[in-house]
Image (cartoon, rainbow, N blue to C red; front, side, top):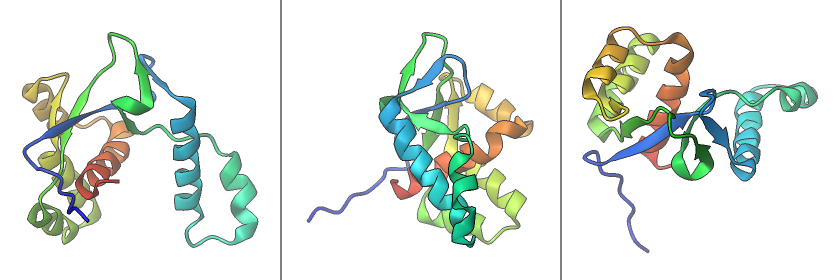
Length: 142
């Protein structure tokens, strides 16, 4: 068995599925929908399943192999957090934790570290939670 490691020095491009230049592939949509239903069912009574399953797929950041891209699609470059960065953030209040993950994990936007820095100073509300989740997924290799 090989040990799989995720380098904090490498980046991965992800794309926001609510971007009109990003089209989610059907198999990826099915897999993400199943994951969303399971996440939203945690702690709920099974009677809630039909309502949870009927909900639309929430926008998220997807890898390049999950999407078809138009030339003007915005690429967010992420890097995995180190264990120490992750643990330090996890000890913080929720809002600070989320922003610490973004501070460490967002490397660039369309290849620009400056655009990423601007985003960190004034994050777009609808992108914060999906971006946080994408950084955690990148960190843990999901």
